[in-house]
View 1 (cartoon, rainbow, N blue to C red):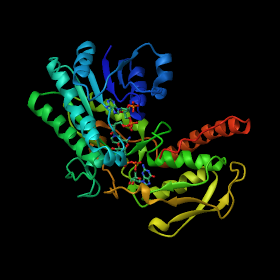
View 2 (view 1 turned 135 degrees about the horizontal axis):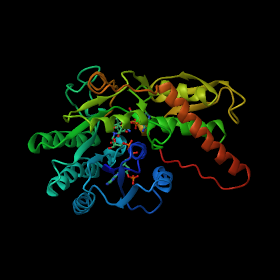
View 3 (view 1 turned 120 degrees about the vertical axis):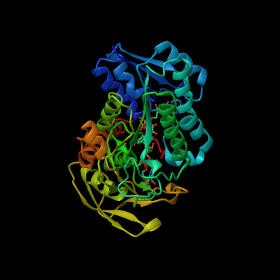
View 4 (view 1 turned 60 degrees about the horizontal axis):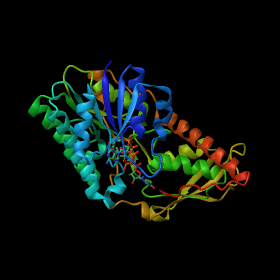
Length: 368
Ligand code: NDP
Ligand code: GDR
C-alpha cells in the first residue's frame, strides 16, 4: 500500500485528490489547520467512509510540525497543495502569502531531506498559470518566461524554482504542475466562477438581488478540478520527474461565464456600458426556475472594489506536452462544468429558500 501526504487536503483539489488516491488503494494523510470553526466539510464524508485516510493538525508555517509528520508518515508521495491561494487577498497579506506559499514549500522539501527521504519520497508542487502573469507568449507552455503580477504569484515563483532546484541538487523526484484555473462545485466561494454560480443561484431564488464583479474582461483557461488532480497523480508515476502545463487550450471571459451561468439558472442577460459602468439586465426568464426576478432588472454590475492593483488579463495554456508524454486530455468542458456548478448551487439555494419560507433565519455569506 502506497502512502501519500497531502497539504491543503481541506481545499478543492485536496479533497478530489484524496478521493482519487483512496480509490487507487493509497493510505492518505492530510494536513489540516486548527480553526475556530469547522474547516473539514470537503473531506468529512470521505473520512466517514474510509479508514485509510488520516488527518493531522499542522501548518506550512511550522517546520517542526512538518519534520515530525514526514518522519512519522514516511510518505511515498507528497502533494504540496496547501497555500494562501487567493490572488486578490495576497495583495492584502503579502508577507503571509510568501510565508506559506514560498517558505512553506522549502520547509516541506527540507522536512523530506532532513528525514533522509529524498530518494524515496516523490514531491508534487502546485504551481500555477499565475506565474505567466503579464504574458510573454500565447499560448503559454512550459518554456514561456514567467512574469508574476501579484504577491501570490511571486511567492509561487520561488516555490517553482526551489522545487526544480531540489530535483537538480539532490536528485529528488520533484515536479511542478503548472495548472491553469480549475473549478468545480467544491471551488471556494470567493473565486470568480463559484461567486458567479452561487450568487446567480441565490438571485434566481430571491435570496440576493445583485452580483457585483470586478474585471469582466479577464480571460481564463478554465478546466475541471477532477481532470486536473488526475494529472497531479500521473505526474508522480513517471520514470523521470518533469514539469507540465495543465490546461484545456481554450479561454473565455468572465462575462461569458456569467452569461453561461445565468442561462443555466434560467435567466437571459444583456450587457451594456463599459468598465465601471457595465451592467447586465434581465431580458428573458425561464419561469419554471426563476422567482422574484423581473425583465429589466439589473442583476450584474461592476464594482471597482473587486479590481486588483495589478491584473492578469489573459491566460491560455498549451497542454501539448502533457498530452504527448502522459496521454492526458481534459474530459470535462467549461460548459459542462458550468452546468454542474450552477445546478449544485441552485440545489443549495433551494434548501436556503425553503428554510427561509418556514421562518428560519438564513444568513447568506456576503464575503466576496
Ligand atoms: P484552496 O484555496 O481550495 O485550498 C487551499 C488549501 O491550503 C486549504 O486546504 C487550506 O486550508 C490550505 N492552507 C492554507 N494556508 C495554509 C497553511 N498556512 N498551512 C497549511 N495549509 C494551508 O485551493 P485549491 O484547492 O483551489 O488549490 C490547491 C493548490 O493549487 C493551491 O496551492 C493553489 O495555489 C494551487 N493552484 C490552484 C489552481 C486552481 O485554479 N484551483 C490553479 C493553479 C494552482 P484551510 O481549508 O484551513 O483554509
Ligand atoms: P485567479 O482566480 O485570480 O485567476 O486565481 P479568480 O477566480 O479569483 O479570478 C479570475 C479572474 O476573474 C476576475 N474577477 C474576479 N475575481 C474574483 N475572485 N472576484 C470577483 O468579484 C471578480 N471579478 C472579476 C479576476 O480579476 C481575475 O482576472 C486562481 C486561484 O485558484 C489561484 O490560486 C490559481 O493559482 C490561479 O487561479 C490559476
